[in-house]
Image 1 (cartoon, rainbow, N blue to C red):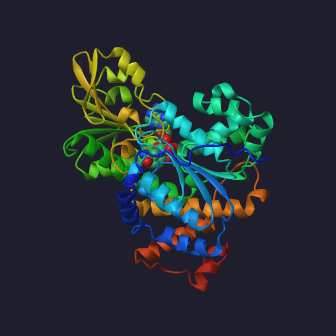
Image 2 (cartoon, rainbow, N blue to C red; image 1 turned 90 degrees about the vertical axis):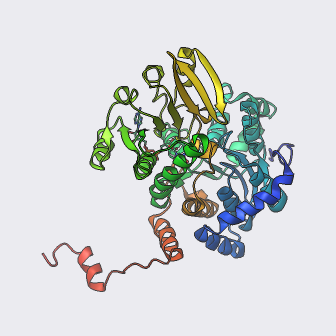
Amino acid sequence: MSVQTEVARYDVRDISLADEGKRRTEWSERSMPVLRQIRARFAKEQPLKGTRLSACLHVTTETANLMITLRAAGADIALCASNPLSTQDDVAAHLVRDHGVHVYAIKGEDHETYYTHIAQALAFAPDMTQDDGADLVGSLHMIALNRLDDLAPPIRRWVESLSTDERRALVAGVRGSTEETTTGVIRLKAMAKEGVLQFPIIAVNDSDTKHMFDNRYGTGQSTLDGIVRATNLLLAGSTVVVVGYGWCGRGVAMRARGAGAHVIVTEVEPVPALEARMDGFEVRPMADAAPVGDLFVTLTGNIHVIRAEHFSAMKDGAIVCNSGHFNVELDLDGLARIASERRMVRNLVEEFVVKGRRIMVLGEGRLINLAAAEGHPASVMDMSFANQALAAELLAKESKTLSKSVHRLPAAVDQEIARLKLQSMGIAIDTLTAEQVEYLASWDAGT
Ligand SMILES: NC(=O)c1ccc[n+]([C@@H]2O[C@H](COP(=O)([O-])OP(=O)(O)OC[C@H]3O[C@@H](n4cnc5c(N)ncnc54)[C@H](O)[C@@H]3O)[C@@H](O)[C@H]2O)c1
């Protein structure tokens, strides 16, 4: 049974922005040599021919290059945003006009529109999905488990217009999905543990060529880029509090130090806390860091890591932002409760007055690198999206034999992506000699 329902072909801000989107997408393409090679092979081999793919990703120039690659592989695509503030409207227009992608995404869309767009991507009746944060797959599972009250109202209204058989067919039609980010993977692993996962997932984030580079160097650079664009803050001489020392936190701490900031790390796990200390950063609990930080950046994937008691201890002029996936890391309701005044003082900068002290929150607490800058540089997304493209190919070929759990791409794929990236950078490495191969495989030679 087909469940595809009548939806608009696209919903973007202004289709006449397509020329600019094309120019900027082509600029990113120059820094994506690995994806370009995969595209050339896909165009010949058509591994996604006949695939209906719904993607929920940040609609950036790099994502456009992934979409163009998947189109070259033969896929039909619906694309919605994975964050209300991360869409680049010119890119959305370009994908619609020049590549026939059904894009449903507008920068700054309200909650209602954000979820209407996810419903439109679901109404495309995909047989494969791609997520960044598991919003699309999460909704599909609420439908599968008949937990309609847990769906956002626009999605629930659409689902209620479907018959029970149509809802079943919608979920049963999905062969598999890929997930881009840490937060999404955590959710999907929790679903697998509860035994509710309906189809196999490939956790792109778990590839070494994804999290070691995208999360660390991509987030490290683009988060500071977003903060500087939003505020024009001088990092040199400032005290930056990095909340969470995972892959993303390591990157932000490293780059903030490079810009001359004094960096304090807060953590809840002893091992990353120790690593931060031995990397040369000061480590303190948030209660101690709150009164001394000039800039706070959360990168934990956790909820309410900065709360009212911390906001009320901050000094006048403190800047607070988040670069973790969801806008739950800052307790903004708690801040609003203790603030005597709030107003926008600059684009994407909201000032709250707490006990006479001004605290600035950037980008509504949403990922600041996408809200105020352009997200990660294309060169790093080259590897993340090479993983996405190869994960889609793997699902197209092997979804029937994959269990309904969360999988990694094979290590050989990771190594091949790294090899191609090195090659594109003109970097050669050594190969093992026959003697070395034998030595490494033995337990009794050369002791
Ligand atoms: N901005 C971006 O473009 C971007 C890119 C990649 C990932 N992400 C997101 O960033 C977040 C972090 O990703 P990651 O790969 O670094 O995850 P990670 O699991 O490697 O690191 C998270 C760290 O936060 C720590 N933590 C948890 N709760 C904390 C608390 N209350 N206080 C202090 N530390 C705490 C954990 O112990 C862990 O060390 C996720 O939500 C991920 O989806 C954002």
